[in-house]
Image (tube, rainbow, N blue to C red):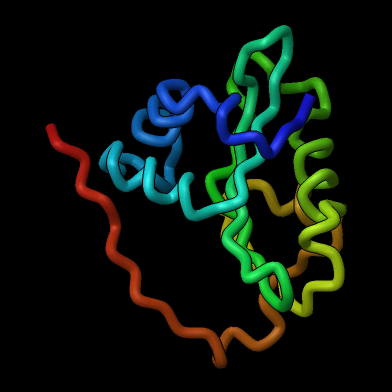
Length: 137
């Protein structure tokens, strides 16, 4: 099952994966993750009542959405869950008709391209401030 009900989220599992296993959020303070979850549309994947995967969408629900913190736990990979998750996100009724979707990935281009994502067409128009987390030793 995939649900946007935040009450179902196992934040301990999500925090452990993002803080210890992901390449993009290592060192994220737990309080910052809690705030991010509170202010995002969250999608949890559940198999047999256990958290199997997660994604967040930051959006105004009218023009723009940013997909982030996407993962399927290693024990649940190879079952098509990431495809199901992305498909569920892009077809969610609150996110229909958006002008722009974005995401960043180091290694999942093949997954996202199946749903219409492509490299940024005009990267010279995009800017960022990037402040990586510092994981305590």
